Length: 110
Ligand SMILES: [Zn+2]
Image (cartoon, rainbow, N blue to C red):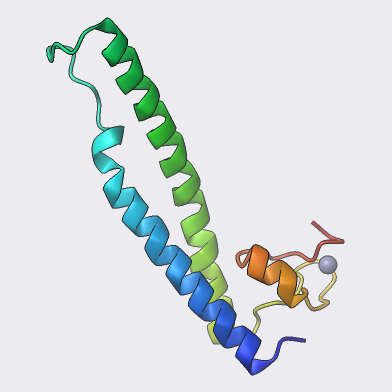
């Protein structure tokens, strides 16, 4: 079972993680934008730019997947249901939650 202190620590961790993901989303917005074909930057730089764009898009995709899970974790904290494995209804150990605060399953069920 989680102590109140542990729960607060996790809530702070999740809130910070959400902020970080949102910031990174904004920062990488420019990198994700389509490279205009009429800007002459040379063929190799264009390939570089496309690669950077792909990486930025992949990062964004992962962030957009993770954000709702983290927000859901905050909802669960509010409802007092956070930290309980969805499958076996056992407590998920604090160490696992710290590592992966959005997890809904214990290590055994994951
Ligand atoms: Zn479980």
